[in-house]
Image (cartoon, rainbow, N blue to C red; front, side, top):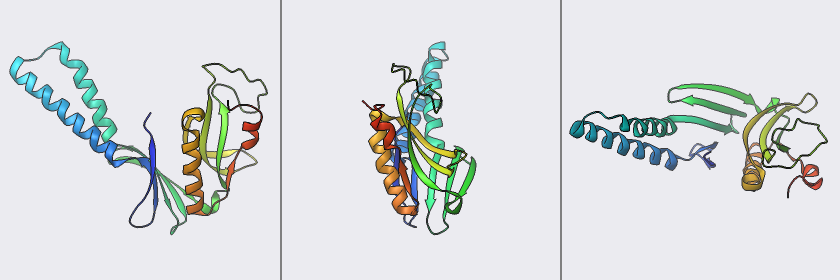
Length: 184
């Protein structure tokens, strides 16, 4: 929905999240909507037509305070996933020692892994996922981001290269999938 960006903080960590400018823009837009609603309510009174702008203002305010970010800290040797709204966030920490590799995997949406049947259609778009692979044999992994490969695949691969260079973890991109003709 929103494009994530990779930035380096002053203390040397990599943060993969929604940009601060997008958050500020959403907050300003929400304030403008709420002030317009408040002004209209004071001048004209309540009307059912104010329901849509109210829902829109609340949704934009939600985006401004929503946190979905990955913090990579080479000094501590861990990756932290922060997910939630405002101060009500959950944190999952993954030690670099437990991560086998950073991987980019391509798949068709709606088609199970390992299936040899490829049904190209608008419902089965090719997707790319950036993930931390914990155990390659069992397939245990944690997705960082999943995007449409045709539109955002190259950006995701660039981010994966930067994260792998920072964390010194191996990077694996499933090029054999691309050679079989999934990417058009």
